[in-house]
Length: 436
Length: 112
Image (tube, rainbow over all chains, first blue to last red; front, side, top):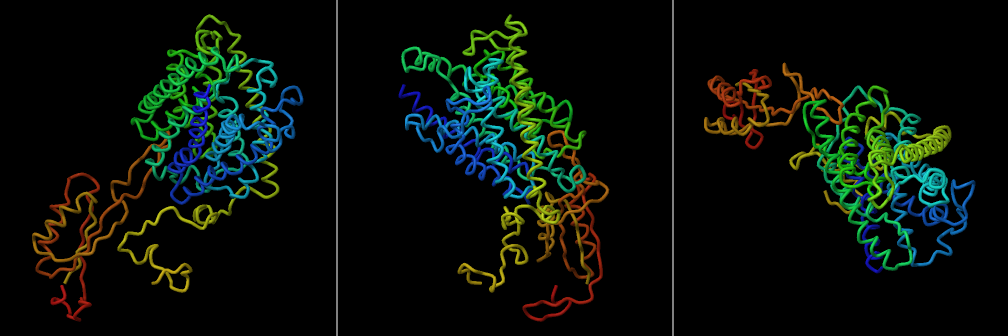
């Protein structure tokens, strides 16, 4: 099984790349030029904070053996600081850590341009501890976790744990934190869609680690059965991940062409992510037709859903709800329709003669994740709002959060001939050996 | 002496410059500006959200010319910048009291 081990090292690094830089680029390009650095920093900071929390008590709380409260979470102190975890399991720990990181980072898109970095840093460990680790335990501690035990729902790589979880958190935080100054009145168009296109492409690339790396062995003894499973199952998940994403991109483009007249680059980038989100829970449950259907439905539905926030006056700045919550629910619930017993998951859904049983299980799993994440995020969100507060001052927000929070600006937009722009400096203010 | 100011479409700038150079205009000041006239900007759609972009990028050219050349220079600019579509821009002429060449201190016509 050395091949599997080598693949998991690569897969882990691929998922790491999804947060930094892929998600940072994807989100950064969609934000305004005065807040791109802060947007990217929210992903980078999530990497640091969540990663360290994960090795301290995250692994123990998600996958430890001492289950608490009927499958809601595991004892955070059993394997605290990876005490008692063998080095042979470190890659597994790291792989799961990268999932926690990107889930937290995904939320940042809903609250762009207006949140204090310090409040984000306080939010991160609270949220992954109270929302992410429990849901990961509920879904992925097979037969022990609450959702796994009661519904046996399928979630191959994180439709509930990652996308519904982050999507609901984004929705709740956007409501608690409120709209940006000028939302709905002034244009807040993406400032650099080339960054977004690069980010979307890198996310797609990294997602192979995310989905294909999420294989769990049935036998688990490293024998011939495991090898056979590895050799066939990775093919299915790789194929499904690819094809569903292609279908979703085309689905999004088709819907926006009909609704708004043009197929856009932002639509292509968004469709890619919507498809990846929807195939995340379902990549091991469906065959090729199911993957195409789930992708196309997710792409089309998300393209329509992202327009709803204006009707509700919700400033989910970069559409975490419209893409991750909607896509996550579609992928999770449609397993109950398109899953096939010929796929690795081994369960027939509605269209494959399996009746409504699987559909009910999948919907219940989605509902539990929505409820848990919603309640927990609301508690944390209000706690921060009424203590340290979430928002930077209105003046700072209008000036640009990049300078207010980081003392930097992303672009020196002055031309080389300009002496009035950014490049001339007062001699007295120069600190680092620049001779005027 | 007159100041000819022209606000034109950015992609017409090279043609205007070439035509003026052929005529013999030796210098000008050019800036990237934004504004709008009857065209009133345009609409862009991002994820279903329509944005009215009020300001359109333009190029502003400023040339100080001798009174005798005003008609020729304005004609050249208008001809080179014209596409016939809305948003082509405007040219206007204003009087200049005095011109001084910084390098030599020459004044008025000699400084043009």
